[in-house]
Image (cartoon, rainbow, N blue to C red; front, side, top):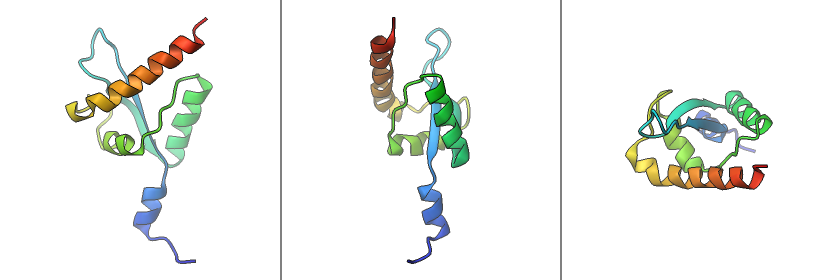
Length: 97
């Protein structure tokens, strides 16, 4: 089996980005946390432990992971993030008592 190059290994690393949005203070969702490898796995585990809905989109994660912490998401991602927020709202409605 051929050895993977450093680039292949980096691309294979799991990435995660957590967003936060406060309608009262934010004009757009912001990057709350992000990480790759073990840190990404820990972010995902924390979300699962707290019953925070998780949405997987590798292309969007790639774009958002390049942003600084607390940065507002760029306008080009608004539609994709709106779809995720709709997913979260629907999930919250299903699980609300």
